[in-house]
Length: 247
Ligand SMILES: NC(=O)c1ccc[n+]([C@@H]2O[C@H](COP(=O)([O-])OP(=O)(O)OC[C@H]3O[C@@H](n4cnc5c(N)ncnc54)[C@H](OP(=O)(O)O)[C@@H]3O)[C@@H](O)[C@H]2O)c1
Image (cartoon, rainbow, N blue to C red):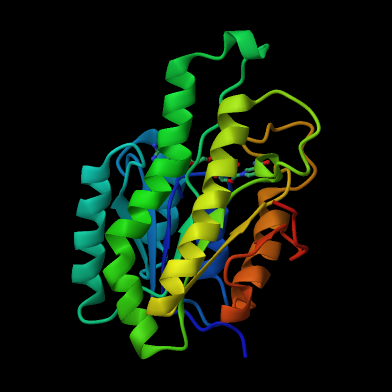
């Protein structure tokens, strides 16, 4: 039986994988009742495509959420709670993320390290804290609630036999460790959590020329993974076809 989710929060949905996720979820044959599409600047230029899409899909609700601001994360959870009325939130896709590039490790600045760590690790962690009670409420009423953290293979210690992209790779290793740790705790509230690498995808972050997958191809696979989510998969780290990635 596929995972039935009536409500989902997708962070970083102004563009790239996040926007494509919102688009494909809204176009499912049985779409969720609420798709909370969060972005940093709902009125900004970057969110225009999302605004246009939401104007044609009444279940897509745009909310402001900046992963660098716990205040905005908390406010978004209040808004989502109001919209959900007395229901819980079934699923979070922690997708928002950034990558910085430096010619070599000597050029990596403390500012880069901290900004990437805050966006890719602290923000997703605070999202889970802020939405925990809503997820737990869904977990009480249904088989389970779920969190999908969008990580990357660069966060695997075992798979990384090359240097470079230090702030980003270290942040994804942090996200992986966070996922594994939370999987031991949240399951008591009937919330399962896992992390996934979406593959190398043609986005601003992945690069628009060499990456192998289009956002559409990657997200088609991720949606299949979401539909197959189950408590048996609590705490796993896999690629977009469901193959386990070594930590
Ligand atoms: N593309 C790949 O090859 C690849 C590979 C492995 C993992 N991933 C992961 O997939 C996820 C999505 O990446 P993508 O490829 O779709 O990148 P992208 O096209 O650059 O999109 C990144 C998204 O994150 C949002 N974002 C950035 N900083 C934020 C903040 N402080 N608060 C809230 N949102 C913020 C951006 O919003 P704005 O429009 O406001 O900037 C944008 O919507 C990331 O976690 C990334 O690490 C991607």
